Length: 77
Image: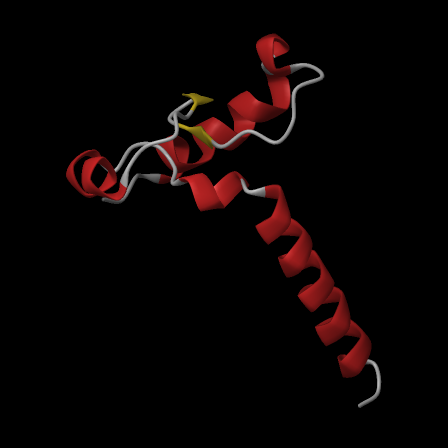
């Protein structure tokens, strides 16, 4: 499922200027709205929403720490 340039950029532009998103962070956005958590079965049918692990704080922290470690190692070369 691919979009043209304007449709592809629309959610990013909306996220940058939407007053309803002011002071709100940590959300998964799609098609100019805040997406809903879904199941793998529903996601495969609709291509809408996100799976719970996408916004899991423990996973995010783990990824952050791994990323920092990789960046620090790359400075050695």
